[in-house]
Image (tube, rainbow, N blue to C red):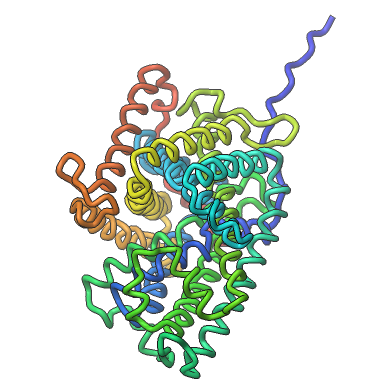
Length: 493
């Protein structure tokens, strides 16, 4: 009598999506309309008419790091991206920290994205009274996170179809707003006076070094999220090339969108009004939409709503796939490696991300709404950290190829290192600036420091403690050794 062989464990569904789907998810994860609404006022307050130039300058490190993601994905198409690549380059401890940073960025921001999506949807529907009710908004935001998580679990194909509709809606709305705003600004038909666009607006250095630094920090946040396309590598057709190309092209499309809308906003509203309302953040778009479109202001409100809702879902993807990848290599408990047999998606890690994100969102909300905003500000520390780690890992991973040709040297070494260096510089500046309580929404010192810095450092220290505790429980992952530098394989072919 023969013994039945055990059934193989289910894996993520190969070929579930294609290049275009991956590109859409990369774009949706950045939440273009919401990101613009959140940063355009503060950027203008810092650099004035040079806001489009700052959005252009912020694109440079993003493109360089996206190139590193593309090269590393060809070598190791793992849904854990930074976690897997940094582990292979520098060893388990550095890889674990990179994976933790990615996972926690999702936890920090998902609840806030859901809240923006809920508030703006209520405004579009004319339900202003409910939008002003904090308990109602918090409850609806929690529900939205659960719904988006369920869609993630139900299948990558379903997620992709939903994101196509949402990205088309917000792109069309932004285009309408930008065209109307520029035309009215140039004509002088603006309640704020309006300005005529100039090529000088594309000069990021026009406002000086200190202002540029602050603007770049905001710009990096606006571009963050495109790597969600690469986290879906194991579920994408042509997994070694398509996800990386999607990540790179996402940054290019974002560049055109951000610079175009920034020019439109500055042309229509000028600098004085935008700087004076910088503290309103995403509400700036609500005010501008009414001034620019009148009774059609719901178009822009809908754009911000769909943008935030789309990003609520796509931001869960990197965190859940990273958790899956870590668990497969025994860097986390094995249950996080569970893949739904029916839907072929990481079910356990997805629901854990949703649960922790909701707990964080509600817990920080109970402290104060300003504390929630400070937790989002802390994102800049984590983003700069894992992007910089990836850039350095790329140069080190392919170090033996860098002397073979100028092409290899630039695309595999110089570019990723410059991108990592710029982000490391911004990380240091973030630590300096966020140490000052006056640079926080709370405006109060925590342990003598600004709350965003305390939150960022606290998250990383918590990660270090959890890492050491898990290593004591199961040390298999820490027996891995950094991989050998690749010589005879072309990651750029």
